[in-house]
Length: 376
Image (cartoon, rainbow, N blue to C red; front, side, top):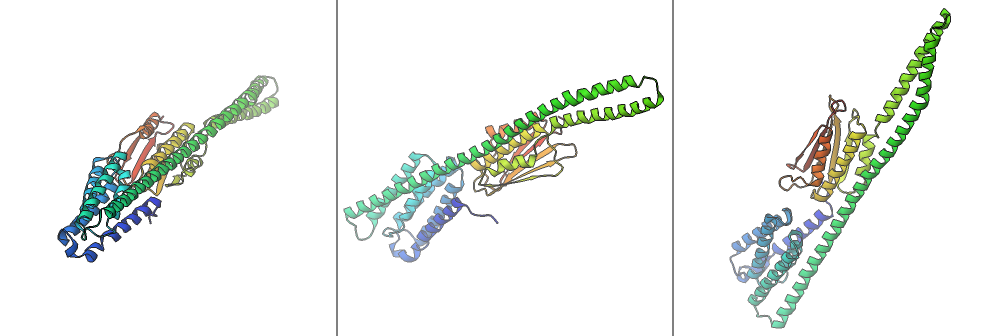
């Protein structure tokens, strides 16, 4: 079951408040206090909810979001004007001012607040009982301050959210850099040990083999038999040393541990890593997958709206190729655009003889394939 985060909870709370403001109006006001037929007002309220949903769900600073916000602002004014004298209905103006900060820049918010204030002025002028000028000015000033305050709070919350996002991305980048730095240190140490093994033991075993080769030509059948066995043992030891040196040079860090370290740096969305038991990655493949994981995590943190979990799976094919699949459960918004991060994933996969594909049909999915070591 999908868990609601702070942003989803706040959105649902605002929705409940808006419904609590709108729904009672037809029952409290009655047809005699409405300037339009009840059916028309109800349809306008339904259209207002739809426009609000469009403004909220579409990506910011897009035509759809701006159109939704414009319709929401005009319909809010219409709802307030057509039922003058309902004291709680102007709360919708405050909600609209806060919503505008998520859709566009400051000038858009200023235009929304100005439009809302003008609509409220018209509503007070049409209100029954002819309120005094002082009362109208006080009410306009109060709701103007409330709109500005709600917009300022929304801007502050967005700024804080951006800072948290950048901090999370920085943690992921540092974790990936730390993993690669540790591996570089281990690789350097393995190379040093392999060279010493080769220079010390390997050299001595080579000399021993040559000496035994010479002794094999000396007279004495029994001596020659022992010398032959010693020569076989020396050759086996030399082969073992060479195999050990080669393994030290090829051995990569545990892929699961490396990816887990990057995943642990991200508090939200939750990152789950699954690496198949038959996956064997060398140093180059491990470094590439660590960087791909970093880019995938960064993309999820920055762009996967309402995502709660990011699942990463690495499997191996019969040909030794590695397949990396990452999928989040966030909301999708239109076609995939290759930014620097996604383009970097493609380049890393192609450099190792594979490729990468992306899909935003349900959540966002990244699939990268690295060719087997023999093929590369």
